[in-house]
Length: 56
Image (tube, rainbow, N blue to C red; front, top):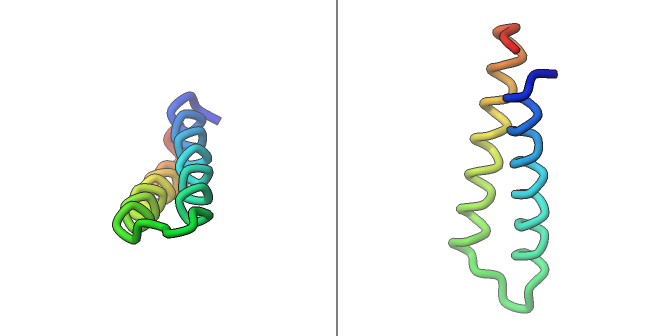
């Protein structure tokens, strides 16, 4: 695994944690939840592109 992939995975995990916290609130903010989901998906897409291209 490359350093770049490692950093993206770290960021993805951190966003996942923030998303769980945001959704677990008494009154989740829909815009914050949506923003976090969008960021998490963008990172997942970047990871997939890196893996498909074979670049590390």
